[in-house]
Image (cartoon, rainbow, N blue to C red; front, side):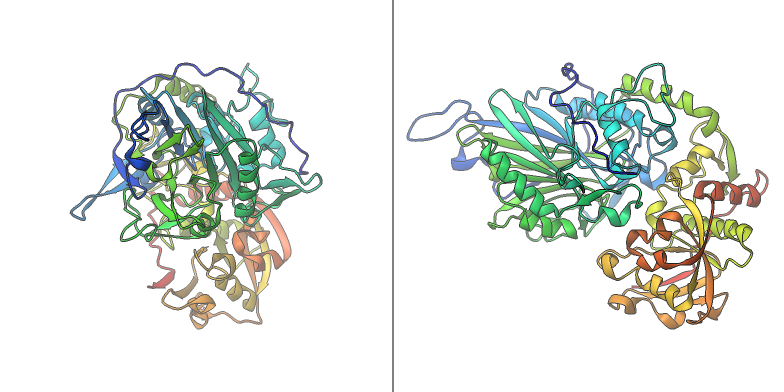
Length: 607
């Protein structure tokens, strides 16, 4: 949609914070700290040892609670999406059920107990790709939940642009949906917290579409927050969602506004960056500073952290859905905290920023941080239970309808996943209904947001797949599109999985039955796709032949770093991808004959 600028964000909070209240249980903790744990000059909080005297109250600890990539997961996520892995000292691991805003609220409120200086921030993707309870209502329920969580500020993420800048402005400022209207008898009020979009500019005005930064104040303590999303957002969001917008370099933008904040007298600065890294372990409490600072993390956030001005004191990150608490050297060679709290509300990060009233800056050597698990063994927050019940009641007539049956869990993890195969097969089947000459289907892994689980989530019974569960898996409302490609183009598409923007973090497309090939990850670049191994129904792909390919509309536009998929011809547009999945499940499963999980054996991976 056109990038008409949303109305200016309110300058002050809409409502005064109510007293934050306590819950009863603590989370599981992992601690990472920067270099020395003590304050400068061995001073402790509240005193300054200088020339035999004291400076009462010089140092003030500020609690920063943060999380990222909630994606509208108000209820506990299903399957592996609702668990975290904990590593023990002896090398063993265990999984912990985690997530759900009823529990997140309890943990955050408990963490704030007794903390007079506490601020809560987020690293983007609060909405978008959301389960039915939120996505069906254009994520108004999630904004309501975040208001109740007392979120103070968040950066935008790429998914905040799924429905375009105008809809993001509505989530910020309130008002009923322009097409679907109001869902309840109360007008949607919008977010009580500012969304920050420092590097997202209106192409016409050249100005940020939302506030670039926000300053938290408590008495004489001030901390500035700058919010950015990844510069590559247009590559992973539909063209319509980012129409009329430009996305600028993260480092240049943060450095620009850090300088502006410094001129305004704000010397303590936190960057909220919707871009992330890849720790060497999937355990949430992995020590990514062993053997040295930042040695255990890689990915885009490392280069960003190394180049963001030393004026920024900490980086809250996201996007990759990984958990880490690391220290990465800034351009001056001094360690700086970089954190991420996984995704879906399974973790939150508890960081202590020690504010020096004499300098107005953060005593960086005293910064410490911990990722805490949002366990489900604590009391549920009653206000969140009420919120979920309200929206579930509205969604139930649509969401509770059975659309299929499965005989076991169908997971969405791994280079090739069983659920990826299932969805690709569903799109191939739909493609053949549109055109009997359809040869194959390709599905992007990022479009598969959750697994299908065998255990009943509500009262539908084990093995029953409801519309709500299907919506959680595929919430984007992409259409199934058919296009013609040459065999040479098809092989080039497969090579784009591991080259260009996907070179550092390969995006392995999920493939329909009949397409097989070998992906050799011991090689580099495009050579990782073994060209001679690419076959359709056992026959080698003919570079000169024409193949009819089904994809979703996001891929058909060249999304996710697959420009060749945007060059297809003879386009035909079908139903939305969820409808295709529903049709496939209905045709191929029943209560007496449920669908078995696919074997995920179409791509041979060599490591």
